[in-house]
Image (cartoon, rainbow, N blue to C red; front, side, top):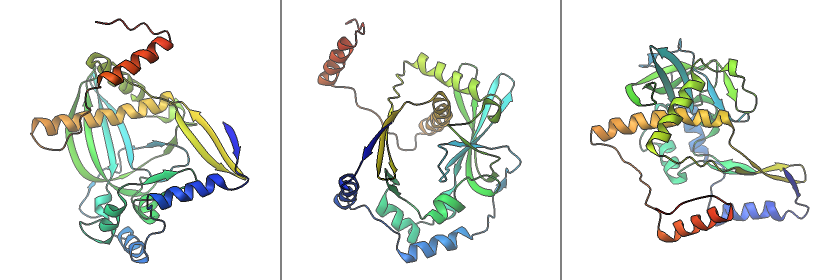
Length: 279
């Protein structure tokens, strides 16, 4: 990390200018905050009860807006992944105040000195967040992962869950994780290699506000983060396959790289001494 002292406030002013340029909203209107508080008090009814399943979350240590949790079990030679996504739809109804405000904002935007939330913290960091030791509404995708890494979606259900622990990338221990976690990641990675998928995880640039300035640095993706991403990939693949087989859903595809992009990449490969034969 490199400390950048912002004695004149230039960087802080620049971040404010970015907010202004892109018309990023600040506080939520009072009526939206009131709607969030009312929604947070809504009792959980009509959900399947999966609070006995030992879900956990795995995120950066400071995160409190936890939108996914997981549980893993062995089934013969297969690994069964229960992947829970926070059920924001329980709190937000189509075209209500919360929904209209969310459409206007689009997404949560993270900045070095704060974030522009999609939903009020009453929901995103409390009632709808999959924080431990409390019943929370979720959508559970149950995915079966075969020994060769092939995945199949077994079921989807709306359920209430109770996370057992809020695990963090920085200090999680292998004993904290469900049995089968490393094996699941290895299976998904092996299947990626067979598909010819290219995994590129460049270091993440970080700009952290500290007293009198900022700290600037780059952080490589840790092995535990890569394993966590494998679970998301397994669920996404299984869901996409089900949608594709049923001829429904929306899919985002990547365009083929152009000649100029390939030429630049070959130039970089040469600079790094990478042997890339032309075929």
